[in-house]
Length: 269
Length: 318
Image (cartoon, rainbow over all chains, first blue to last red):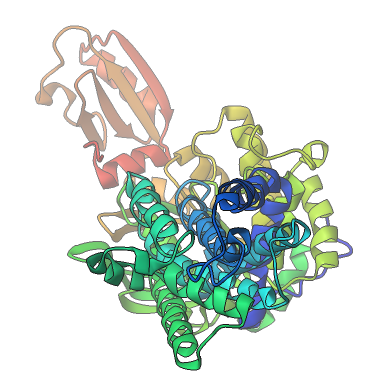
């Protein structure tokens, strides 16, 4: 083993290092994509069929649906809800596994790649994963006739932003756990599911009792749903749009910074 | 391949690859490493011995630039881990105590993915992986998933992976713990080859035979401090004796007066006496002459294990 390969090992530039982490996660995903593709694309399509077309056939277009068919009203919100669900999964078990069970992040920490770069790489990976599955869903929804305009491209971007607003703090939290007790189950049961059901995906929030609405306003999903419909239907008001973007953007930035801290604390001991 | 990396480090040739002065690591109130001095020279195999909790792994983690020191000075490859961690890590190989391979990737993919973190091109890691698979005797399993491999194979893969960047310094934390004798010997053979190629090794172990086989020089750590330093031979000469006579008694053991002067030092264990002496047979003859009648006797060489137990005690550390 003495011939061809002279070493050129060096610390990669910061952005390259982040991308290499994505590359590593992709190497795993390429071999194991089937089950997660089913849950992150097929599931929302089933919801669109059952609720959008099936249940929606019983709903008259009205002011509540913006004068649209229920399925058209539902599709831009469903892409957000499904993006958040996918990102919530990717932000929990795989992150804890990489620290605890597979220990792959421990391995990367011995290379020139720094803990902060691992955190950013993990987040970028989730964003790309969500972008791909959301695109697939929207293509299918378009084929099914549930999409009304090209504004849906905006919905795609909003879906990714909303997913990251939720995933970034959760990734940070997952990096602090030593075992999976009931924490992840609790996140899904008490945050993700209620958010999906009540934060405006299936019906307007003003149908909820007044005292519940503030709870909805602090969920990223509500902001995402509002933005996504505004993009798809061209109904956005500037101030409201800016407010939603600011809220989601702030969650992404704070969550990412928090993740950098928890990754560093976990890996540099 | 690896011989070349020594030349890369030409600037350090006469200096130490690792130099620590008063190096310390504290976790809250607990002092894991309490001010140690080290010099690891290019080309040597340097060992850390010590019971569990002695501070070996903490020291290794500081040297491998993943764990910031909390006191003292440390330079690795002439650089300070505080400020140049990534640049140092680019030239280190690390074999951790617990494997952290990706079990769901193939053997080859593990090498590819890991190599990329060192800024190496895909073409480079592909070519390098072929070399390393050969070296680790994993060619037949190259495209199998890691999961079903034996412990020894996984260990060899971890070592192969640690060489993907042609490291100047290879850090191995308990490399053979949990392996069967065949797997250990094969691993030792590989490490021996690396040494011959000029790779500097730092090894922690609590197998004394491993330390004797592999290390040119070693330190014994206990309670976060270095309690002895030297080559295996020097340590045995200093802290043990050339030979050890073990006398086993089924009935009552003889009293102190009866064994006085038979050896340089006598250790009384529950089931036997250990007599540290330059000439075991002579001491045994002297014992018989005094009328001692042990149920069995054994003369053996003094070993590093005797040194270790003398320095770190026989009390169990959990």
